[in-house]
Image (cartoon, rainbow, N blue to C red; front, side, top):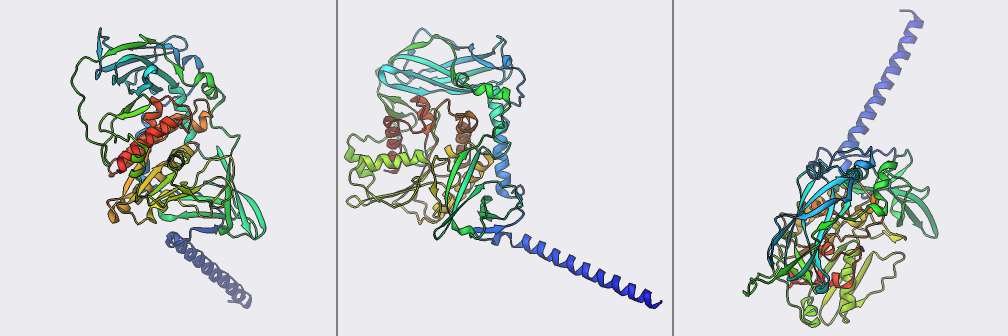
Length: 539
């Protein structure tokens, strides 16, 4: 081998050794990342962000299972012709096997036949309806259970709980084509809501984009626990630490996943349209003088029926158990004595906390000197030894102003920090703020809450836990983001995930349909009915 060949060989050999060393180093880094993933702190800086999934985990499989249970009930439709959409005014509601006389306690079945705008009978189901019967003079109402035969025909099942003239109402809230569009659009991606985070360092404040999904090569702060399978992100401002995130604010974006044709379905005049009913009412008599059955008092762990009850003189009457007879305000007040009450969730459960603090004058509400929208409320009653707290459920919070996040915590994190015990009462409500986001975000959050409650019941089985379902809300409010169809889906998810736990359910969804409220924060008589159910469960 010549001298020049020996020099060339040494150069090639040295280069090869350098490549092998570099490759070994990269492999080492890769495996180190893989095996230390679960040891990441709650907030940290990451680079070259990519979305991770939990597909292979037990939670991931459970999430997919629940998603598929709902998905198979959604019609697989692509809207091409508005004339072939379900039309409430051309559809009809008729009584099945009409009777000459109706008695209190009888069942009433109403058949719904859906037709399109051309007058043709629909051949598939999936329409989203709300059904109720009412007697306005008695301030009486209850909801109906809709049975879908998947051929354009439905049965709505009612129970006649009171005597008098009972009016029938069936509303086509969204046609099946609208339901299909909402489900597809919701689960397409994030992006309907944006978040802006404010990072604070002494006197310096910097705003930065945040969200559940950020696709960028920029430096990103990740706020997560690996075992939760959830994460929230912000672009990291220069010269700021990830831990300096102090405030967030949400904004509706101009993005829509609906097609121009689909958007026509969600014009206000096309939402919640009454279906003509023949006859419009039935007259109900009390046909027996026997006393009503004596029901056991409602207790935690009881399985709830649907409908869960009915309203009479604006007072709620459960159908499968009895409510406590709070004839005086003092009785309600005494029920709260010596209790530590945690309300965790959105502003509808804050409404419960506010109702109690305002109704019972012994409460002293603390001024916590927090900037922005209220996310934490604390009140005590020293005379009755009552400690009451409300705290939000953390991301997402969809609100018109900024709010503090320094002491933010998910529901399951808050539960994990509680000792529990016979004097502890926990009320949980999730849903309203999750409507504009893919439903699997909500499913995973509820799964995490379920796991936290399992742990709580192991260490403190006598802790009382109440699940408040979602309220209905304004019919015409931005259907893609906030439609009640999303809330209906949430209620199915919550009932499925919590069905094996010793918890009580206050079915606010059923109540607000029966009371026909159209406000996410219903009027006082509805809140009072919900509160009385809550107090019955804890006393």
